[in-house]
Structure formats: C-alpha cells, structure tokens
Length: 303
Image 1 (cartoon, one colour):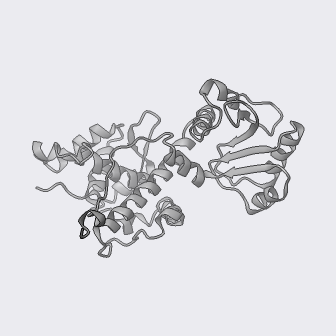
Image 2: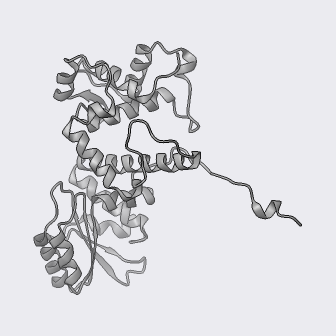
Image 3: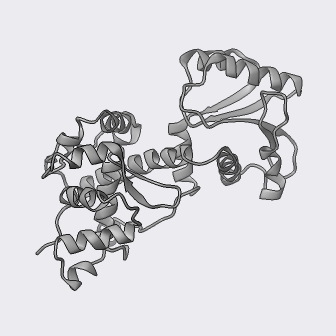
C-alpha cells in the first residue's frame, strides 16, 4: 500500500502512545509502520534529504498532536501521551483532521500565532489548498515549515532551564557579530546583581564599545516597569546601548517608553528571537537545500 499521508499517522501514533510508555521518534515510527503493514521498501523510502518518509511523517503527526496538547516530548526527546490525549483516545477517534484538532484551545492558539507571522501571510489555511504553481507551492511550504520551526524553537526554549537561555543569548549575539569569541563574550552570562543587567558583551572584537544585555525567559508580556529598571541600570553604568531579549512579547507601553529615552535600546521579542535563530543558524540545522533554476535568457538570446 502507498505510505499514508501525515493526517492518517495521527490516530495510530496516539494509539501507540496510549500504553503510557515513552517512545523515541524512531521507535514510534517503527510501530506506526507496523500498524500500516508497510513493506521493507516502503519503510526504507526516503526524501530528497535522505530522511526516511515514515519517520518524517510520524514526526509531523506528533508535531500537530503536541500542539493540540494530546502528547508531549520530554527533555530526553521521548514522546508520551498526556491526560487530554488519554481522554480523547477513550472516545476511539478515527480521523484527527485539522478541523477536528481545532476544538482544542492549544491548537487554536498555535494556529493563530502561525497566522500572525509575517512570513506566512499567503499560506493557505484550508484543508484543501487551492491550485498553485510549483514555485508558489514551494514558497508556501517553506513559509509553513519556517513558522512551525519558529514555534517549536520557542517551545523548546521554555522547556529548558534559565542557564540554557543565557547560553543561547551568547550564541545568538556571537552569530550576529558581537563579542568576537565565546571567551570574549562570556561576561553576558555573569549577572551584575543590580537587578537590571544580565551581562555585558563587546560590540566589536576590539571592545571599543559595550552593549548591555537583559534576557527574560518569560511567558508573560514584558511591561514598562522592566524597561524602566533596564534604563536605570544603563544610566548607573553610564551606558548608552542595550538589548532586551525575551521569549514573550513587549507591551505597547514598554515599546513607547523605549522610543522616548536617550539610550539606544533594541527590543527582541519571542517572534524576532526565533527568526534570528533561524536566519543565523542558532539551534537549527539544515536538512536539505533546493535550488530553483530557470532558462538563462541571455544565453539563448539571438546573436
């Protein structure tokens, strides 16, 4: 039989996890392949990237189940069913379509966050996408993958301890060209103790200027009081440049306040943080690259 689409992987995956045990993605994919009675050739079918199709589709099925709060992945990268997943499984579902998953508030919130991303303004949202050209389909697919990756990065950051976030901030600033090396940038992880500064990093390798850092791994929006404390700490250090990074958002009052102060302060919210991580290769890896080529008009021009 042909390998089923991703949507048909969701129910079997939930059923497999229903025994309460923890499964790695590879173990879950193998069990799903057993469920569908896939042949050895079907199990070994790979994408252009070399990634196994069965494992790829199991992973995407798990992604959507996780967004609905039906399963979760632990710090060790294992999959396990949640209480909500067990309740749903007890109803013996036969097909977990997008429309069905939208009954779960967590899935609704995720879709709303994805829809709000600038990069996917043209992404189809219906079950049956309208016909598009191959190039448009690739562009839309890339936008969806990028938005999903951004959401996953923030989810993974929030599941990690604060020290992980501090290290991530260093890696991101290094990738952006600050600090020169990890040894030179290391002071960003050393809290100053004044309540408004988490660290300092050189703006360039020569150390001609310094940028003061505040990093908040928060779920709640950052308000004006936190920005006032940051600005006050900058003033105490006679500093005029700062970067405030958060995994959440900034309240409008906080943004308005920053625009009125004399110091140059850059605000990086969760959405922008994820974009920068993707663009600069922090916490992500390239699975496959595609080139879209066209006929060279100059080459075929009349001579």
